[in-house]
Image 1 (cartoon, rainbow, N blue to C red):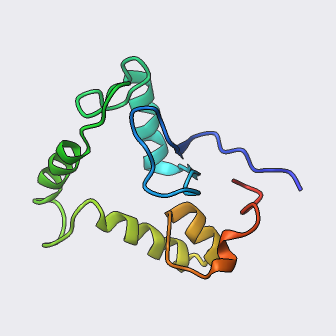
Image 2 (tube, rainbow, N blue to C red):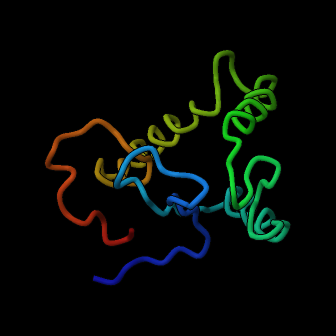
Length: 127
């Protein structure tokens, strides 16, 4: 079976300046539509390969500052009590609505509480 190669995607992976919270959550998230266009613009404007150098450089990450800035920007634009992390759950809901296989939802959406059996194997071929 051949692997699907996405033209534009987000790679969630560990870096020397930022670890991942848990093992096994490295993944590739394909981008389409407006998210793809936004990513292409950001990559063209990146400085030293870093998209948001105010919050991250090749030595440290200021994730609390980035999260606070995003939540401040979002506040007048989204329903009350909606925060950046809410989008993770919306993403998972939209994948389920397509319908997308539960294993793929977990693989793209990040760690979820599951059975021990979900930790075995290599994941989807498109990974």
